[in-house]
View 1: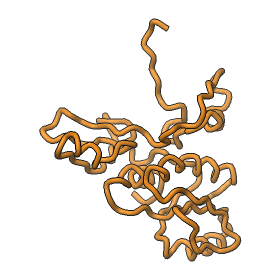
View 2: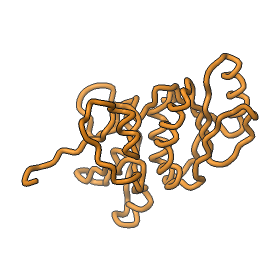
View 3: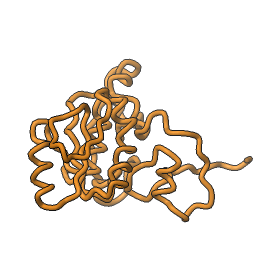
View 4: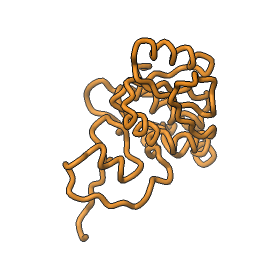
Amino acid sequence: LGEPIAAPSANRYQHVSPTTAAHVRTSLGDAVALILDGGPCSEGMESTVLDLTTEVPEILRPGTVPAEALRRVLGEVEYEPRYAVSGLRASPGQDPVHYAPNAQVELVSREGISARFTELERARERVVGITREPSPMPVSARTLVLSVSPAGFSRELYAAFYAAEALEATVILVESPPSGDAWDAVRDTLARASSDR
């Protein structure tokens, strides 16, 4: 090309990131004239953003490279979720609401997801569940089962959001992810996508 290339995410601001060409078409519609389909993203989640200008390196946005992998190379690494309400962001993805589907996203414990589904269904909401393994959901539940590993779950999460939107969900119930560095990116993404901030 001979010129610099600017490559922002191919999605509407604050909406779910695309992981396939079909997601780009769903998100942007006729706003773009051409979409090059290179197949589904191999990672699915955004990149990790690391600030090396501080004494101790700081993760500004958790992503596909977990803190534990960075610590093996850098030693000490800090991470504290940031929610920038106004002003300049130190990194992309720091808005309180980001990566959000049109439906309301709720994080629910594995033990409470079935009862919450029933409660919302009685309120005539169109509910889709996202879990890490088959869960004790009601027979009527539309449930998307994702990987139990943090890498697999993060690779599949955005596609599950798009699938839930295609099912015209008004509420997406997501089984709360486990604790631990390996799940930082998933927890951060779900916090920004949900009302659980």
